[in-house]
Length: 171
Image: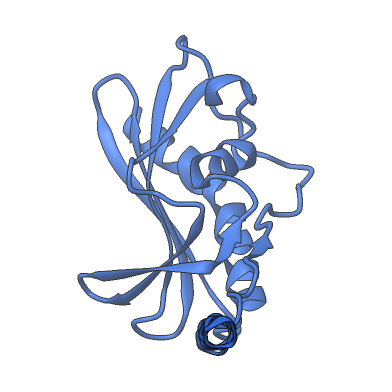
């Protein structure tokens, strides 16, 4: 009887070892912070926030109305934090309550419905005049390093696009 109990226990243990899946690969982290330039357009005080559905994981547009989340590839910070840094907004709560312009990050994604590209869309509100500003950059390919470089290029375009949109709004 004792031998049978050991055999049963060994069989359960062996079955558990065989049926286990290999561990999932660890996530990879990417920093899309653009290289700082000497000339940054003058912007009024900004407060940056992110839409509640934004994620630190890569968000990939795979169809006109379909998004997928890539759990294995992540940004080094939340999208709204990356945008705030690029726009020169201080770390403390992504700008102050005395900000002249509210910036809401509504898209921070990799669009693969055609040639892969990074897309950032923000909605700016300057005194009750809301307006969407979109920047994008084509990726050299579909590899994570290539789309992260495209996101850095898109982020680099954002300050000038925001300054232009604010200039147009004041006319």
